[in-house]
Each structure stands twice: as C-alpha cells, then as structure tokens.
Image (tube, rainbow, N blue to C red; front, side):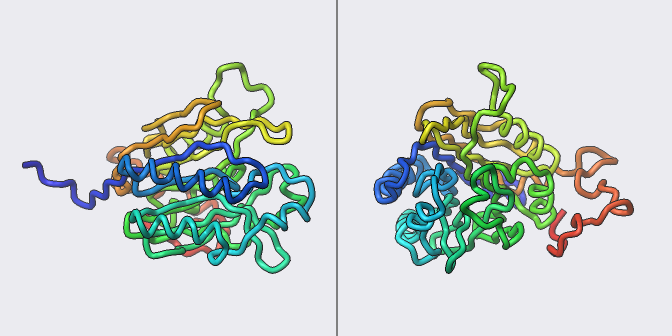
Length: 293
C-alpha cells in the first residue's frame, strides 16, 4: 500500500456554470440547489457558483438592485445554501447581491457544513456596477476551513495581480472566483476568454489553485462568456474550460496543499520568497499580516 503524501488534502472542486434569470431569485436559488446536489452526488465537497447567481447581473437602477438584495447570512438565499451545505457536508462559494443598511455590495458568501464562514465584497467594480454597488471594504480575506485555506475574487478582480498575490501571501490554497465574464474587444473568434489567460498566469505565478465559475446566456442584451475552468497550481487547467453556451459542472479532484509544497521551483527559486521586498513593500502596502509562503 502506498503511503499518503504528507500534508495531502485531496478535495473534489466543482464550478457550476449556469444561467440565472434576471430578478427571479427564488427560481435561481432553486436551480442552484439542484446543480449543487448534482455536483455533490459526483463527490464534490467545494462548490463555486457564478457572480450574482441569485439575482442576475444587469441592473437598470439602484432601486432595482436594492429590491433584489439580501442581508448575509440571514437572508433567504444564504439560508438555502447553508441548509444544503449542512445536509451534504459541503463548502460553497457563491455570488450574491448583498445589502447592509443602505449600502449594496457585489459579494460572495463562503459557507461550510456548520454555516456562514465569511463574506468577500468585490473590490474592483466593472462598468455600470459603479452606479449600484459600493467598492468592497473588507480587503482580501483568506478563510480558514476544514478542507483548506480559501480566498475569493469576483470577476474584474482577476485583472489585478495584487488580489491573488495578497491571498497567496496569506496562505491561500485556492482562490474561488464567482464571475460573469463578458467578451473582450479584439477577442478573435474561437479564442479562450481573456479572463482564463489571466487566471492561468495568476495560478502559475503564485503557485495556487484557481476555480472560476462563470454564467452563460444573454441578459438584457449583454452576452456572457461561459468557459468556467479549474486551474492547477502550475497554471494549466485541470478541468475545463467549459463551453460558451451550455450549463455545465466542471470538476476535478485536487490536492489543495500541493501548491505550497511546489513553490520551490528549483535549487534557487521560490516564487514568493524571490520577491524584491527591498524595493517594494512585502504586502504591497496592505495592512494584511504576512501569511504562509
């Protein structure tokens, strides 16, 4: 019998690519529960849903966004996801339209078998999101869970290398990315989404897993890219990318501790320790405490 790798923490990760229907929160959540159940039946224990999976994305007014928003964790969407996480022993990262007082946030809720673990609020707002949402105000938390250290980014956050780097420096094993990717100008027919390329580079340069769950369909004239993908710590996809048009569950079994073990690339180079912190701040000026290399 082969001995297990020291520190091995094998987990099946699933990214759910779905098409929310704008404004139909109850139906969207019910559909997400069905897909979560299918992913769990296939052995997944960490499941990622798209950005704003409960409401849809293309708001026309702030009043419309506010009417659809919910509080976390006591809103009905969070409670539904917590119930299935408890029943199926799951960790779930899912995009949600959040309300806190009079403020709105494009958020992702992090849920485990014992309930709400934490919330990430999108830091970098895209296009008309600036009309409805406040920029995220809780930094780049890394959530300590029984299956590993989970970081979160949302869609346009992935265009900023600092997001992944700060989470890697805090010891993240995987960054889960609920997203609503849209076509990028100049993208040739048949080319992969620019976001996939950026996520692959980030996974490689930080030696961590990245799991991206995108939506599909066209909402109020805005098409979405699909191509959900799970990327290994070497930067190459280990599952996906999914199609541009179909609802799919992309999944892979990964060892979440492998990225940290593999950061020593050779006798001389370690991707995080090689940073020139004599020339720039170790944590890029953030007050986040130093984590794990």
